[in-house]
Amino acid sequence: MNLSDLFSADQPLLEMVVRGSVIYWFLLIVFRFVLRRDVGSMSMADLLFIVLVADASSNAMQGEYRSVTNGIALLGTLIGWNYLLDVLAYRFAKVAAFLEPPAEPLVRHGKFVARTLRKERITVEEVLAKLREEGIDDLSVIKIARLEGDGKVSVIRND
Image (tube, rainbow, N blue to C red; front, side):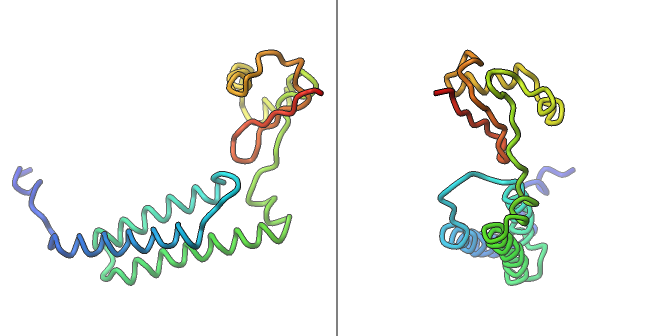
């Protein structure tokens, strides 16, 4: 490998700046105004969406598409599917259940739920660490602790 090849531009730099700017502003507008979320955190569908958007926008910025319009068309398709699935999940419980795994009990009435730990391949030590993050060091104060669909642990204490 020639060291000069490493630093030479294989596409016009102005083209790269324009491509990057167009994709950046397009995604900024989409994420700020179209896909805004106030409640909850990332679901598996959201993570998949972000990975696909990253790949598609990378291709659009690097010039692997003939035009920025091609990249925006692909990004628009991904955004449309993501938005449609969010709407369908909001309106139909079956779609939401398909897209988001249900909450699973990890601790019930101060005792570990071994079936859930095995199913989710979570160790007792991992659960205890999550409970300590919630300020709980005694299982007897827990009415129920659940592994939520987003991977977080929610805890309801005894009264």
